[in-house]
Length: 258
Image (cartoon, rainbow, N blue to C red; front, side, top):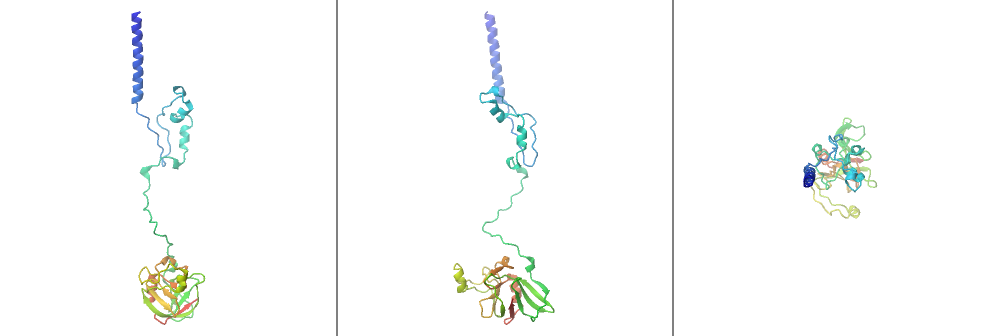
């Protein structure tokens, strides 16, 4: 009897020991590595099945545990069909980020090459040295003779401010000051009452005054406005173009605006 009891105790002890070893093995087993799907690589099935928890091992319900840890039917297919934006990105292959644009710097349209200064054919009747302003097409011509003219791109008056007529250049100034007229200040009370000449001045690098009027042919610190209806009646040019024209004409030159 004693011998049977001893054998039973030894067998129980070995079962308990085996249970401890099995628990230790489970605790020490390395955790399964999660499968990672990269946006630039096709999804692949893991080489080894993910460990599965079955319903009989827990009272939480087999379906729930199977969903968390299982490799049941169609589960791998579900992850393969995820759109790329839901998958883990491949950080090693990311494109370098572009420099962040300064939000305070506005974006302006590119200058149209057709408004560059160029020598063109001229078939009009104006004599050499006459300035012809083609308001509808946004061009200024300086008649050269021999059927040629220098053509420049210009900005002209907004609707309601365009005009036509014949004037003469009554004065020429380099880096002119600007004093907005009362009519303009009534429309734009935020404008300065006077501005010294310089790169920030809206009259630009040169100005040629037309008769006794308030109109001028002048430069601009906004070259992207060339080719548009933008002014209050003045004819504006790029600074490099108005400097070129300024050096070619004299006070008294005829200006025909059409």
